[in-house]
Image 1: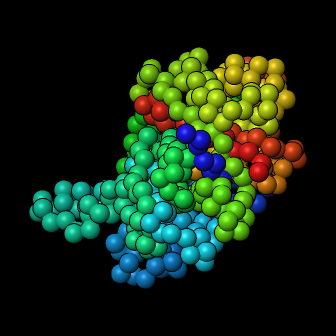
Image 2: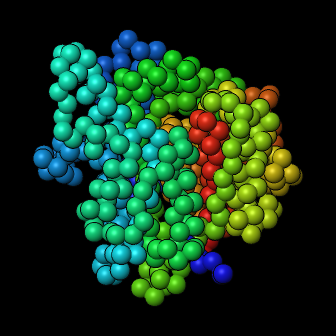
Image 3: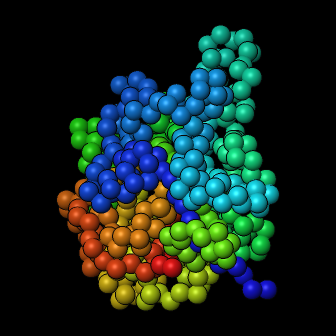
Length: 414
């Protein structure tokens, strides 16, 4: 069976550095940080008092009051990104067969704000009274449900959950379904809204977050010797994936081709990466094999690069092992230095950045680099502090999740 080709015909994003895909990309190129003191709850007693929030987000600018009350912030952000992507792609105006349009969405945690509010409300009163929308607002799969309801898309519809790899896994699942002819178009994305008391408190308890409260904007510093943990972010991204011939037939603008998708497991530890980067190496190797691309054809990798002491070293070592001497000729970066870590939404949001490097031939910087880490090979081009103009024909994006879940996607110029 000959597999069908899968292309990108639209995208949308709402992030800590931009409320739409255009703003997001422009902020990345400028090297702007989205980190700031937390406003969504009182963080004064927490070890970490800052995060990368979506700034000035008012649900009532996007939904009526009754509609907004039925959705957690996670779903609200997801719908905003999906609406932008659907409009960008023009699939509604093209009168596509909605029975052949699916929605696959990733989120690591789902409606955490709703869960926190409802459970604390019960605990404080000891009366088991819950909002009737508690469960529908909280569950991870409700966002793709809302998107399909809004547009009447009857194709494959579900959520992927693999911690921080969730939306990257959504991209890979979508790719495979289109390749097998199970759908013509899939609205694929991810969202996360975990900047809550339990979200920050939980990650603080794991010693996972940066506590650089005196200088939030430089706290996310992937690959820097003085990195002390990741910066929690929130937001959503959405990519419209479409079967190539279907896109051509309707005259769609094609931005890139999703050529490869790789998956692997560290099979090592609940939260720490394999020290030799075994899972990271395998997932990139599997992605290249799926794409039919050789290592020396890669121009750019948007790394997982969370700014954690162990993770950055393991991933850097994996890239060196996979690409050999070619690793020193490509531009690699971590856009988490600007957006923070969007958890389950990171995969698709960073895939949008990788797609833009192909469109614009610019690689955004890894900001906040001050001191080299002797444990990381400095011959690698981390694109520190300033964007670099470079022709990009092949771009990869890595996303790794707690539990050892690894996903990698590869896009090519069309």
